[in-house]
Image (tube, rainbow, N blue to C red; front, side, top):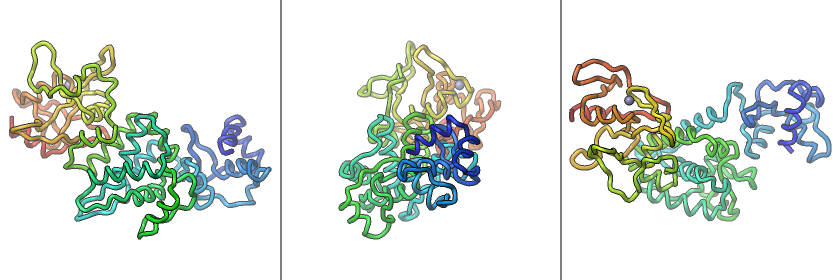
Length: 374
Ligand SMILES: [Zn+2]
């Protein structure tokens, strides 16, 4: 019914649609659908003809976040009061502002793990909505493996928190309980709700790999600074590798030496994520190499992995580089200062500033280690 109203709005145009049904232009609340903005109250009133037999007039109900906004949100639509809102902006904004409780000063990982689980499903285009038995078992296992010490593996709380926060939905339950105390446990167990990402979120993260990568990178660097992030990505299925013609088979041992004929660089889910974030553009020189199969860049560890350096496989320890700069950096001809100035050690000349993108912050501890190594 809502989609039919939106279609009519598109056909008539805004003015004629509002005119026909007697609505004024919305000031505050809009539905965002397929990248376009719609006056939310008018759409709600017109959609109501499918329920009540006729469209509602503007004076017959009130618009706003508590009424129209809540119903649309529950149906999976993105409703916003911001005029400049885009689904991408709204989604990343929410990802950066999760209300995660802390344990010994560290943010708890229940919501980030729930989101990573859902992003992994979305990356593989699995069903958006899953039965509670599946959701509960899989997220519990993740919390057991990747949660903080002493965390209860109760997915009830993150799922309800994310639902009230506007990222998740329980489509059959318009008024789920608040995520506090013991009631959620009994309620979820009794109701066995279907649940999943809201439709606008799911559509966004299935269609836009860059947004998915930005959200993933942000969650990793904020909540999992000391975790093997590549292993976590693989664990939640965020390790697509189908566009990497030069990737060696997974069971092949990492190759760190220079080969004279063809260099095969260890490539994993985390380095693919970082390269996607940078659109395969070198952080030092800005070159984006295009091969017949697509763009090519290399994930370069700042502090080398393995003995004796024992660098970590985390986003903050990776750069996205072209092959030339990768060699120069690995061999110590290039260093990066803490202020991200790139310096040629042979000439002491500055080569400009390391290019950065949202979602990927280099950890300066690793840069210090690399400079000391050189
Ligand atoms: Zn380069």
